[in-house]
Length: 207
Length: 221
Image 1 (cartoon, rainbow over the protein chains, first blue to last red):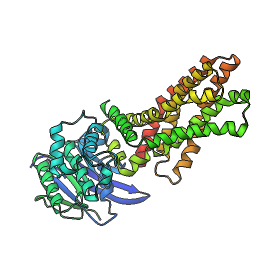
Image 2: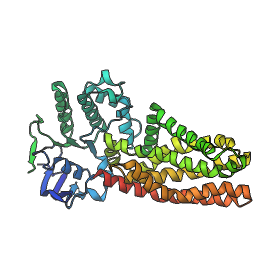
Image 3: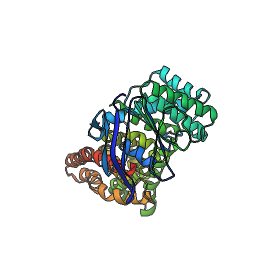
């Protein structure tokens, strides 16, 4: 078995004086998918935010290839693609402008047109590509945000309820994209209430 | 650096899509300054004497007016998380946001002020000096205002709190900005005032991006 790329050990987080979780340890190797399950408020989002260094953990470490990620935060953030509760779309920009802008804000040059087209196509966003994001439905916004995740071409996807508001074809598109990402050696951690539908996914239950 | 220019370009494009937001700020500036002659009376020598102070105060209030949305919009739609997660320094992102704010508020205010200065009866030398002080001084207002906006992010009544935080910190800039015009009229040292304004701008430029980034990280938690 391959050695794990991501190792989390004894992680503990506190929110507003209350312990959300403690002593949390897991590891993930290339191609690995971890589903975070648990009731509302069990700390799934907090764990994702702690992994992304958005929340400072009270104790514990996150290591990538054996190196503490907090030591090189910028290199670590460059490996991440993030999908939060909020989609991070600008209502006044069109779908395709939002995708291009998100990619440029990652410090890359303007993204290759072929890659943007592929990300649009993966989530069936062709028809919507020139629509301002504020006119989109919840599911369409979610699809745009997922297209942004695919476009980022990052090693580790951190996804908070990726299936929220998605209809059946969009869920299938998401599974295809996720399977492709994992098959290419990528990793993913997703907080979810629904079955992600990927064989070999591990599950971590937060109490 | 490409992330910095991308963020400035994005904010300018967002303003371009909604030009009304900038128009309101500039209209406020014009209306607020024209209220003074109505309230004080039309004596030309009085108006010319208070013109610099009035225009500087009005520019300060106008800049504050647009600041409460500086980070709040990104906070509310989740793009702030994307900035926090970008693989380049958040301090640069803070600087980019304030730069974009200055381009769409400080710069047009400085360009508009001479016309209002003429209406107040300032002579041509004083009008040019007024524009120069505003050009050098308004970046300070954008940076200090950006810090106040970042600190009040997510707070209730953040607009009022922002003004309370930012206004005292803007006092030195206000004093030297308005004082420069006064110095010009009374034969004082205009260049020294301008140099102090520039020094204030450089000090805030060198310190506030770090403070803004820290406040944004705190807001992201």
